[in-house]
Length: 347
Image (cartoon, rainbow, N blue to C red):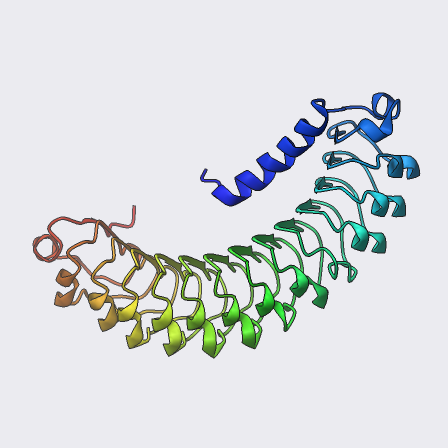
């Protein structure tokens, strides 16, 4: 599995900072409370803890705190006193609320509260402008506070597997965002200013209820990976032509019957997945995406292959099984795509 280099260094340097300060990682409250001001790295993960003591504020110099994989139900307000805290992990607990005192954790660079029971995120991000990594995935969150737009250094945002129905209108102000995942939520659309996130390179939106994309979507000129699989999109905007950096495009499981002609301007595109849509034929524009290497049209209603498919001389894999072909002329197929592996049989 590939790990984003910047996220890797965020986590490594956060740990390195605490190590350099003290040279020791504490793994129990009992040992840590002996000299709390000398504790910089506290790892209490996987200890079946149910309560975080209010006295946690005695760790005045704490940089790294890991409380993941426990049975914690609440976070004491005293956590807000940890003024030097850079990394906080609370994943896999039973936490339902984030205290408002989180707003005072102004040195936070990494915050992870995934796989808990959060429903509401309070407006605590106003002062947390140093955060680069934020993971709130696998909760039951329905909305995000507008103050999330204040995270001007946010690099990676994980929001998958929640109940989010809409994103804040000002989310376009996340001027450093590189990767965003909002998979498996309840989105029906994206904010109008979404195209202002010019730094975005990876966007994962599969398993939502999105019906259309904003007109300025093509302003995401640095976007390389886009997954819109299993939404309710019946038409792509012509503005797709602006996505000059796009390499991987996933549109399977939608309601597409055609594609805009401007798709031919996606000069970087190498992988296109259009499985499980409503295509009755392969759109002409496909034959003009000359750099395509992998093309997926499985589970459609296509009954014939156009001769122009031979234009795709760089294509390596072509999946067209489970369509409406009565039979496939294998000799013709070999002439059209002599160097491509074609999968057309239903087994």
